[in-house]
Amino acid sequence: MTIEATDPQLAAYPALSAYLAQQSQQSQQAGQFEEAPPTYPTYPAHPAPPVQPAQPIHPVQPAAPDPDPDPAPAQPRPERSGPTREVFAERAPQTAAETGAGTDAGTGAVRVPALRIRPRVMRRGIVAGAGAVSLLWGSQAEPSARLDALFAGAAHLSGLLAGYGILVMLLLMARVPAVEHGVGADRLARWHSLGGRYVLGLVGAHGVLALCGYAAYTGTDVLRATAQLLGYGGIVAAAFGTLALGAAGVSSVRVARARISQETWRAVHFLTYLGAALAFAHQLVGPDVSGSPLTVWAWAMLHATVAVLIVWYRGVVPVRQALRHGLRVVEVRDESPDVVSVVMRGTGLDALRAEPGQFLRWRFVQRRLWHTSLPFSLSAPVRDDTVRITVKALGVHSRRMRRLRPGTRVLATGPFGAMTAHRRTRRKVLLLAGGVGITPMRVLFEALPAAPGDLTLLYRASNAAQLVLRDELEAIAVARGAALHYLLGPSDAAFDPLAPQALRDLVPELAEHDVYLCGPGPMAAAATASLLKAGVPQQHIHSEQFSF
Image (cartoon, rainbow, N blue to C red; front, side):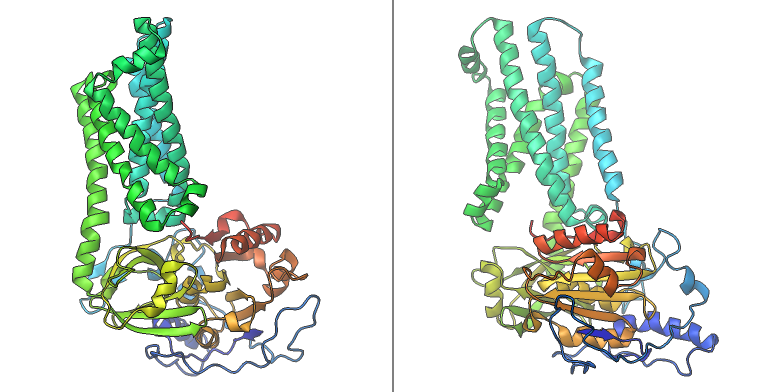
């Protein structure tokens, strides 16, 4: 089913009122509108009455004719004037919704735009740090052709790089807002996973090279050299640190991860901190770091900085947010047989500065749920100190969400994620959602600044019964003059509604759109491939996967 909502009348969504009122005022000056739009009331506790479509909903069929053979003629889109025309002329975000600037509700305090570190800058910084560590090693290395010296030099370099790599891995998972909001939680998780392999390889290489170098220096065999080295307390500590890092790495292997619970995996992963501490103590007595007071100071400051960031953003900030906001469950609402919405209320929630498209990590203080932090996107903007998430029963913990009781205390940490308006660089926007991936898309559908006709939402589902938040989506489409298309049908059907030509038919000038994508992994991968084939540049496809 397709809703082409080109009528400029407005419906009930307050997050849009400031933007659309400004646009309407500009249009009035140009003689396009006769009256100003009304102010939006807040969204109701229950879904709004559905907007009646022109035609019944039908699944997408192969080579089927348009199910609406006589659609109402689209009203001409008003010519935009003034600053609205230039909003997305530059790559840098220009609006408050994109930059995070504005004022806090109630206090009127001016908010400074959120700092974001772009992925390219982060990558360059990591590589530059590795280069600096290599230069540190090179400045102290003494050229020698002896076998033991060659082994020792390689062991020192691999050890320094391994220690630096451990710091980088911890920083990536420290939940620093500037990194999380600029790079994106899913990309950080992938970097962490890939970097962990390199770190474990460097740690293993350091141990083997050091052992071989010692054996060559003393003229003994490897077994005897191992026994002698384990007589030193520092070497024993390093060995235990290696085992701790190895256990964390093994638990993250896909086969092992599938066999253990989330709680067990997290507990084992905490061994990374032990491994990092033991590695730091080992390096402080090594020749490459201890050879200069300045080097010792710099190495210690790097470790202290990362430790402070971890303690602050993973420990202090969550506790402070819990005490400040006092979130509690207000209602658990069925959206479909396997999807529920959880409505929560607290105090001062505007201070979270949660942007459309972001998610938080939620800990529900209830039996069998309190020990797990669950990442879920907001499915509605923060409004009147009320937040909402919409969850599909995909695992043990998400199935237990249906049994949450009103009054349950909630600890929320965040927000996280980079799939927000600040990534937008083009005037026209396509939102592409699959399954419960509609949750962040629903908020973006309401909040992204866009003129009538510039915003399109494609919602992929197996059948009409799987569509969630449908009434709200249709009301937003009418309110905003946006296009809403439901792509229904099984994933193994002969006709693929996400094929390149099908997408081009649904979305005119597809290649000129920014695309926001969220859905199950296979669907997201197939949609990305189709978008690329349809001519959408890779840098204009914005997505995040939450299966980390």
